[in-house]
Image 1: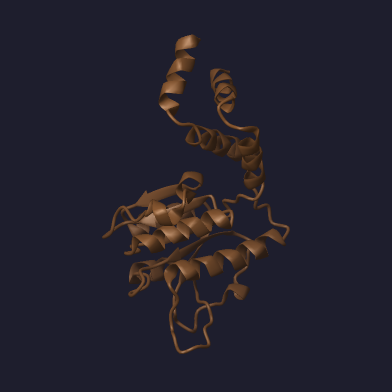
Image 2: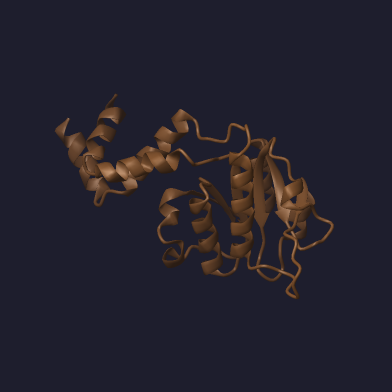
Length: 218
């Protein structure tokens, strides 16, 4: 009950327009698809992928930071890091096993032409799309542990895409495919409530002082 009263109190510090926008965005949010980045070196690429995740309604992004840490550039992400849940891992196997345990099919991106195209990927199971470094691609460990290898067909002289561009293409195509299907891809009522409460707190300056003032007044 106290948590409900606190949330009602905090809502008074957020405009009605912002609260309405939260509801609109949450209606399109999904955890049916997630993104995994393994050792992406350039900060602007990792940040651009997080930005794309937010744009296409992906709530969760996973960062595997075996060699490179702090891959977020807030200037590139443009605040997207506030609205997505970013999960950090130090080990590829741990990340993949954790996602598989949660019911995700692991889909590793590669430039190998024998990999499947996005059109060939079924959407009958939750999907985790794994992207690798700009030059080396995914590690052999990630490729070996994937359920499927996927690639984006290219017909020009260039044989690879920037990782942020590749992620945007994948997310656009697969979210479109998912939303036109009969799969239950939307967030649950409980998930929406938790995320909404988090967004409200992130929208308020000096949140710690305001929460302390609330508890002091009880």
